[in-house]
Image 1 (tube, rainbow, N blue to C red):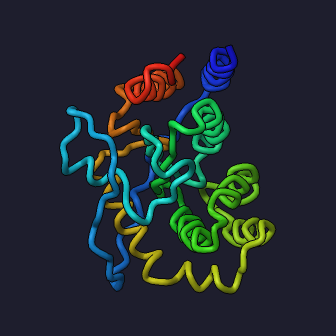
Image 2 (cartoon, helix red, strand yellow):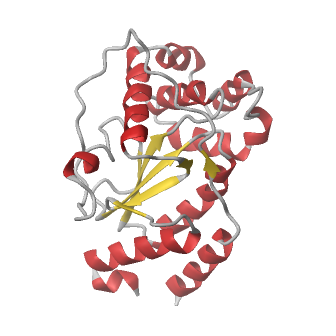
Length: 234
């Protein structure tokens, strides 16, 4: 009964949500960065996706929210300045509440909007302080304060991070470090290879949605949970 009610609530919330279309190319890879070898973390395979593309879905540097060994992986390509990503954030959390042991979310970055590359650097830096999730939530919640597509206020984004317990001096150093360069480079390359054209873009156990929408996301998750454990979809 609880899952049926929660599912209805998720679908109701998602009905009117839309995505941000790609209107700016990802930032070019930094010329001076020395990217580590491209290594993929394990992910369930779907016959419709090639092994080469599947290897690009999850990277060792990617933030993971939820049980590391969960049988269902939602890969979300997001832009911290994207209104659609902010709107979907509570819905993704509700899906994880609905399937607390079955689902994990892996975050990838698609820096389509002006200034988003700096916001990604910020998130890479705070991830090293184990502050990724609260800072991303805060950036989404206060998106209107900093994420103008024409004149983003990145100083305000950093203030938001500081208000969530981030060591600012360390974070600003880490945001300029080669590791941040590498994340931007690899994620940008994967955005191109996987043909990510809008944010958010979701893959569920390697399966892309044929069309964008609330029901498609929830149905894919339910189907994959059901494959992992028939009782899990009830």
